[in-house]
Amino acid sequence: MRKPLGREQIVDAAFQLLDAAGIEGVSLRKVACQLGIRAPSLYWHFKSKQALSDAMADALIEDVARDIPAGQPWRATLRQVAHEFRRGLKAHRDGARVYAGTYIASENVLRLGEAMIKALAEAGAPVGFAATAAMDLAYYVMGFVIEEQAMPDYRQLEDVGKAFLALSQARFPYCWQARHLMTEPDFDRRFEQGLGLMLDGIEHWLAQADTQRAQQGALPAQARTAAAP
Image 1 (cartoon, rainbow, N blue to C red):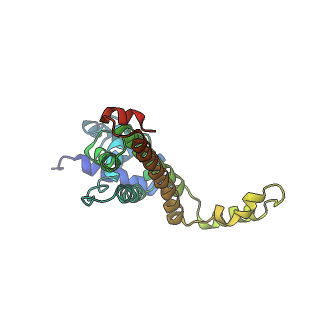
Image 2: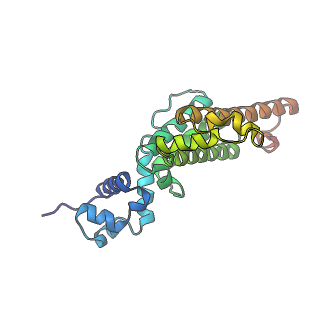
Image 3: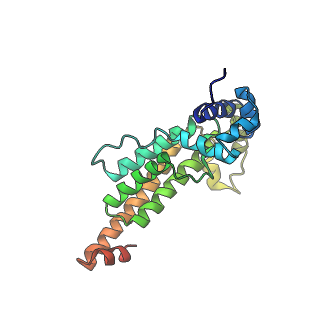
């Protein structure tokens, strides 16, 4: 007698299809085929492909923000979460595309957001700014990994590089000077640089807010929040 299927088995089968065929290759019918069952059997667990995608997205970030050291500076916390988020999305082919567009209030998703918002709020940022910064950082990671996972193989990259080398120096002088960087496949370096720019921007905002509070003197907490830039 066949053991009843659980959600985890179904999600695992969906990831196997994702790794083999990409996001376009995942459907409830194909997952059912992978498991050797009929598609209607899946509807007990997932009413639609979107519901399955939500569960896959949630699984991708299962290990993100689980171990944030107590008292860690906000910048280190955001950097840690960003790197763990990126690793989670990269764990499977098209992982970032699976995650993008899903809006789920799961334990994993809320833990990721809580870690970043808490770190910024404890550094003095209003919760509204902290939440916006956390979302913007998450969007940066998702967008970066979508592009990273869509990158052509090295042979295609060489062809693109040749096209850049053929650029007219007179017409596109700055692109021509940056031609080698534009096709550089070092995504780790690129990610770290972009992340650093975002964190620098947040740090600048926090410093401005501190300066403004110091200039205004001791105001009630509500007034300080309203006056923050």
